[in-house]
Length: 523
Image (cartoon, rainbow, N blue to C red; front, side, top):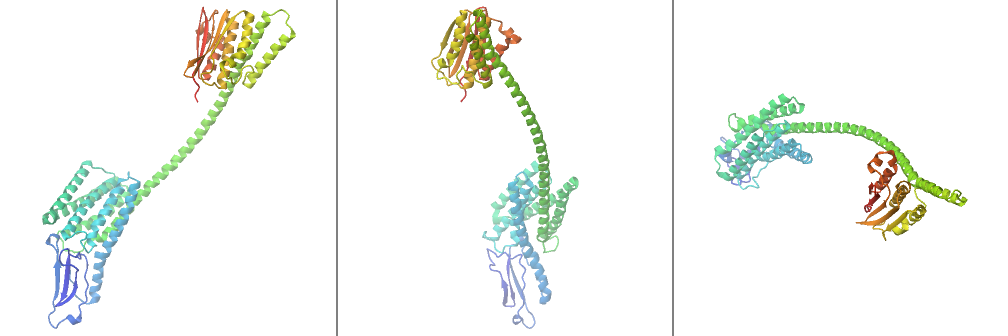
C-alpha cells in the first residue's frame, strides 16, 4: 500500500503516510536515479520499506536496477499499464454509464440498457481502486477494501443481469437468488468490518469472479444458439474479457507468477466494444421503428383515402336524403296546408247556394294562393312565427275553423292555457299549427261529429300538450297506420316526432282523441 526507499543512509523517496490511513500507492510505479554522491566504494545497500496487510496480499513488486536507457522504457510501460489505462478506463466507464443511463430513463422497457448503465457505474467505482492514492472517505485501508469488495459483488451481479436481458433471457428464480445472496454478502461484509478473516475475503472475491466467468461462458452458448449478429459480437467481446479475467484471477490466487493485470489493459477496449453492440442494437431498433412508422404512414394515407371516399359517398347520401326529406316535407305541407284549404273550400261550395257571388270565389282563390305561398316560404301567413300567448297564436286557426264548424252546425270548444309553459320556437309553432290543421280537417272530412274540443294546456315541467277530441264515428287506428288511407295520421306522427314530441291516438265508436305531448325544448 505504501512504502519508502533509501540508498545506504540517504532517502530516495517516501509516500506521504506509512501508517493508517496508508497512502494507496500500491499501483504506482517508482523511478529514481541513484545520486553518485550517495554511492560508496564497495558495498551499497538499497533499502525498501513496504507497509501493508497480509489480508490483501501485500508485498514488493519487481525491482530493476540498471542504466537509465534500460530502466526508463520499462518504467514508462509500467506507468501506461498501471496509471494511464486505469484512468482511461474510468473516463470510458463514466461516459458510457451516464449515456446508457439516460437512454434507459427515456426507454424504460429496454432493461438491458439500464443494467449496462449500472454495470458501467459499478466498474467505475471498482476501477477507483487502481487510480486513487488515498483511502478517503474511509479512515482505514480495511474500510476502503470492504467498499471495493461490495462494489465488485454488485458489478458481477449487474453484469449477469445485463447479459441475460441483452440475450433475451429471464431466469426469475436464479435472478432472485443472485440478488438475495448479494445482499446477504454485503450485509455480512459491513458487519465484520476490519475483523473479516482472510478466507472470507478470498471466498467473496473468487465466488463473484466465478459468477462473472460463468455468465461470459453461458452467453457464448446463447449467441451460438440465436446466431444474431449483435449477440455474436457481444460474445466475442466477452470472450476477450473472459481471458483477461481468468488470467487476473490466477494471478490473484498466486497460481501464476505475474504482477500485471490484463483486465485494466483490456477493459477499455472491451467496454467500447460492448457499447458499440448496444448502440448497434439501439440503432437497429430505431430502424425497425422508422420502417414501422413508414408502413404506418402508408396505412394512414390509405385509410385517409378510404375515409375521403366514404365521406364523399356519405355526402352524396346526405344530399339525396335531404332532397327526399324536402320532397316529403313539401308533400306533407301540400297535404296539411293546401289540401285542407281545398277540402274546406269544397265543403263551403257544397253547403252554399247554387250560385255564389264572385267575391266568394276570389276569397277561396286567395286562400289557396296563401297556402301555396306558405309551402314555398316555409311559413304560414295565418299562423304567426312568434306569439306572446297561446291565445294569440291559436286565434287565426280558431277564426278560420270556427266559421267552418259554424256553417256545418258543429259545436266547437276551445280551451287554451293563459300563457306558455316555456317559450316555444318557430319550428314548434309551425309544427303544432300543421298538426292542428290536419286534425281539424279530418274532423270535417271524416268524423261526422256534433262536437269538437281543442285543448292547449300546460303539462308541467315546461311541457305542452295539444289535444283534439270529437264525438264522431271514429276509425280503426291500427288499420289506418297500415293502409294508404292513413297518410294523414302518419304525417301528423312524423311532424310531432320531428320536434321531439309524441302523438297518442285513441279512436272508437264514441269518437276520436288526438293528444300531442311536447316536452320542454332543450336550451
